[in-house]
Image (cartoon, rainbow, N blue to C red; front, side, top):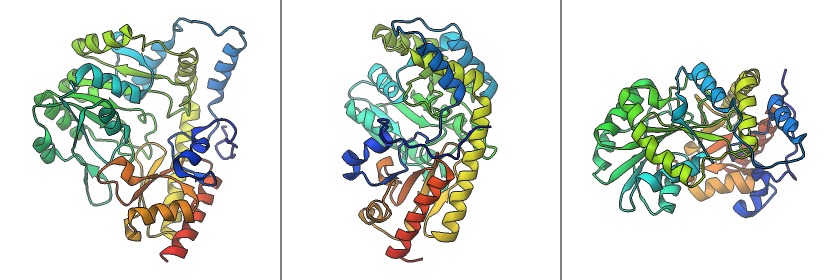
Amino acid sequence: MYDFSTEIERRGSGDLMHEALLPRWGRDDLQPMWVADMDFAVCPDILNAIRRRLDHPILGYTVEPEDFWPSVQYWILSHHGWQVERPWLKFIPGIVKGIGMVINVFVKPDEKVIVMPPVYHPFFLTPRGNHREVVWNPLRRRDGGYYDIDFDNLEKVCDNKCRLLILCTPHNPAGICWDKETLQNLAAFCYDHHLLVISDEIHCDLALFGHKHIPFATVSDKARDISITFQAPTKTFNIAGVISSYAIVPNPEIRRKFYGWITANELDEANLFAPIATIAAYRHGEPWRRELIAYLEDNVRFVEDYCRQYIPGIRPLRPQASFLVWLDCRDLHLSHDALLDLFIDKAHLALNDGEMFGPGGEGFMRLNIGSPRSYIERGLRHLADAVNSTVGT
């Protein structure tokens, strides 16, 4: 029903995927497969809802549409089995911004933030930018390529200055849907050590291959009482340019402090199009999402098969969620600079390199497969040619 196979020219639209190539890589002739938005046309119901609003010639101050929060509650309940109460919800102007807000409200300048790399880099850049110390608790890589939380090390690094732990679930870049027992153990640890938890769940509606996302706050009473959950429709429905994120805070004391600060600074007022896009996505976007999931799963299989046949030195970790594939390139036995040279100067590809995700990311690259298959095949063909001419098969 929906078209995910047609390549859409994005150059000239002001898209970050292309416009940032020159300032970030020093050249604009690369095939971009990096930043985490997709190359698919947005669900028609969302575009039509925005177009209907644009039929009115005045774009002034507006009130929240009546169905904004009911649509969010409906989506969370129907997809994740979580009955979220209306007072728990608050608009935030982006999840990274939300992380910065939490840090400024709850973490004093001499206190610390725990981060579990390799992980989405703003998790440690944002605390550092706000002059808070980052404490590393690296994930433990196990056989098969997936990761576990290292609770033994967490006990060692957590001191009485640690106030916040930032959790990525589903995990970016490894695409892990954390299991309930892991989340319960993390909640118990953080509760006992008086740690607030930010649970970034922006990829929660993109679970693949039968995996299921479990909201952190639902796994136990302790998790509910210490958590601030961030979600959004933006990754799932490819509307990152329409900032539409929200926080979920069940604990009334945390909510009073955090939401009071947000309201006082008028950071909870959504732009005109955010509620419109969210309602359309959550009320009408499910058929589109289901077809997207099927297409992404086939893309993952294609990448796995292609690497197995043509680039055996690169092993993709099958994501349990999202459209990002964590490529293990360590069997190529290249230094970081040589790996970048391979992808950028020889294959002419722009990916996120593993080191930007912190300790444990060395020797990896993050590949965005949220594109038509022909586009992915072209990029992998360039990569295969570069690998074979550089390091051989």
